[in-house]
Length: 326
Image (cartoon, rainbow, N blue to C red):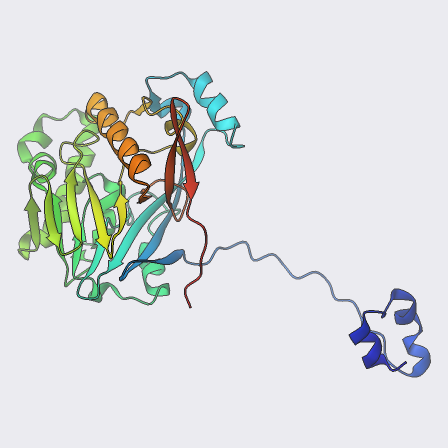
């Protein structure tokens, strides 16, 4: 039997390999193992929602000591909940942003952390470019709330990172975070959040490109802001609809899937009003489970898209099934 036939038939064995030299076929020499690369590709994930193209952009990850940050629970309960998912604190936590191409507008939901959270974050620009878009193409940016890991990517130094974009934020958040009076009276360990917000939004304010809204507001056809105040005074979620399909982007409505789906009453130190934040989370969970629409969240494990269902006294998370686009 010829060598090519052996290869095709699957009968090519180690014993045959040992004897190939007899027929004048040189043996294949072994090579040393290649060095490990140990880097990840820029993160983007693309899916369709009706006629809208949804691109999830990874800004990177950050380790969170959730056993110390979560409230209305105990470190022991947190540890037990994490262990069910083979996790332990600190939990490596995603920071996601969502790019929506409606066909008429290119809309970015949140902008990542920029340079403000260290080298493991601030990767949104690389992810955006890898996905096939440029920052100059972004028409509008909708901010869920003005914590630095959601607005830091708006700037490159002291310049707007998205020079042609209008930035939209709920008025309650702009009034709170951009207030010099609030900065002046804030405790020393909280002043930085106000200072960063003021500096980050400055180029957009100066260019007349910061446009606030109040409460439930349709911003462009198919994308509506929905008030979910609590995590911050103006925290908003965004409802995206096309061809009868719905995606609701939760921002920081929740942070730790392994804990807060099973027990929505668990809150986090970052909440401005933990009781209001819990009420909004419970409301959003119940609505998503009842109506079976898709959800996305800033700190769900990338790409952070999926569905939830009622399970026991809490809820269960079902990640979106991977379907590559043609």
